[in-house]
Length: 163
Ligand SMILES: Nc1ncnc2c1ncn2[C@@H]1O[C@H](COP(=O)(O)OP(=O)(O)O)[C@@H](O)[C@H]1O
Ligand SMILES: [Mg+2]
Image (cartoon, rainbow, N blue to C red; front, side):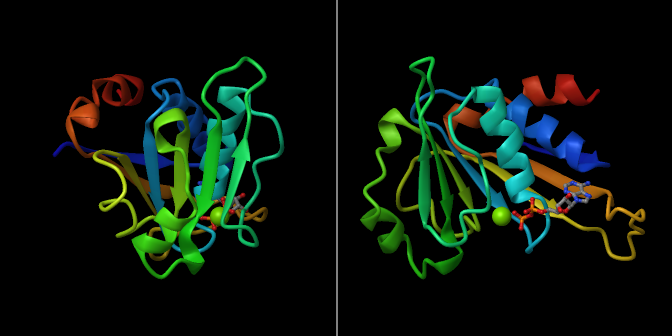
């Protein structure tokens, strides 16, 4: 399993990382986002959604479990899931998401995807302890991207963008 560590300085950089990941995505792909509240999961997804050209604002889906964003260009829709309130992968399964035909991004994904998909791109976001925020709350994040399954065995595209 390959892992790539990134230091993301600002919310704009986090959105740009989402956009970079978006450039790799196609129908059937899943992205797992983990990290505490306020880590930047939705900020990442916003950048990802913008790069896909999705319709509808990508916001924190805390009060809905999943939101589908169609793409006017006819590309696979983005399904943005907030698994915070799901207690088991069975509940995720119950949402009847069309994984095959969608790009699925799951916030609070830990332990949720194994039973549902074969492979996913894992993005773990951390706020470093003792980090110092600017006046407007901007603070670096440490991001670890891990690929699971054959689909994500090659993260060269990400390494190339980082270096
Ligand atoms: N380096 C950074 N990367 C991402 N978000 C950041 C960063 N620094 C500050 N922030 C702020 O942290 C918050 C992250 O919120 P959000 O993306 O909703 O997190 P989550 O979905 O993980 O709860 C936003 O207000 C964003 O502006
Ligand atoms: Mg969120």
